Image (cartoon, rainbow, N blue to C red; front, top):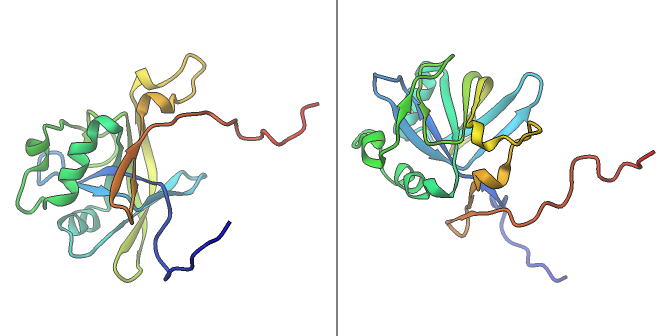
Length: 190
């Protein structure tokens, strides 16, 4: 296989395309599209998001110390794109996208009703990395649409049809075509 060497870049593919809610349920709630999001610890459960300081959501997140990561599926692609292209400073993104804010159980920012999974987060650490600040947060509550859970209690990822983003191609993708195995598939069975 022949490979071409490129300049250092953020060509990690795929990335989740999530909607992050910030602010309060009734005071200045906002939604920002984030693709720089990931799990950083399992005990306690923690994840991170990266946000540019110039974004309207930056200070809402920094000031409250909380946010909600709302997982998206292919059905939310237009809302994801809208929330990534318009500023909450100028538009009410809930109103413009038709998304429904719902009260969270542990944090002030609202959940998005149409999202199959909502992760309530409280910030534990913030790092200024250059173009972005990273907000590392503990997941303090998880909400999952019951229709996305199988009879044996597993998450049915195909039902979610998760939306992903290819940064350099600036494209949204979805769909899981084939299950290739479960964790531990290389361990010998006795």
